[in-house]
Length: 195
Image 1 (cartoon, rainbow, N blue to C red):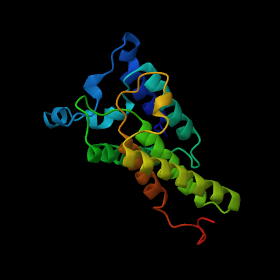
Image 2: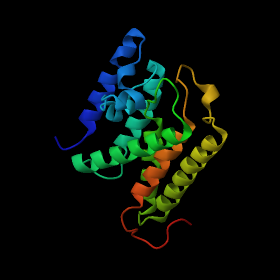
Image 3: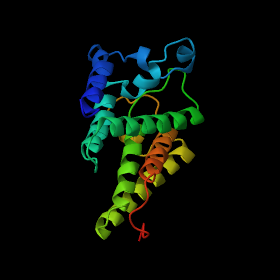
Image 4: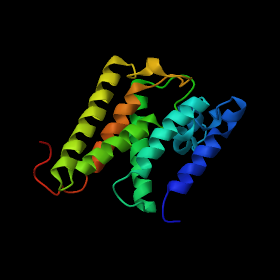
């Protein structure tokens, strides 16, 4: 298999199958105490778990759209590195903010990271329009994430049409910072970045 995409889709389906009966897969969420007791799979499965079908459609929809629109070809090793980095950034942000008693799950931090990563990749494009769009994307996703982390409130959270659990705003910033740093890991093609 040359891409991680089928694995991601399978994990999403398996982790959210219990939602068809109205119950989230709590045995897969990030729970530090359970991990300390040997349930280490939670480190890899927690982003794919959601608290409701609405939450799954919202998070997975955004993530899968961004994943499909990646500016680089999908390769298994590169895909795994991107996912591992974004998952780690999102989780680090959530841990820094303090995990809720029920654990941590969802792809929103990873999706924010994917957006920031893609924005930085666009900044590296030779086309000035792409660079400007990339700058706007990075500024918006980082700005939004910083505001959310400072206020502790996810922007537009009052507009949700369903249950999304207790959002941890800092996971968006953790994911976005990880994505921006990942995008900047290769030497920039142009000395002119934004502007």
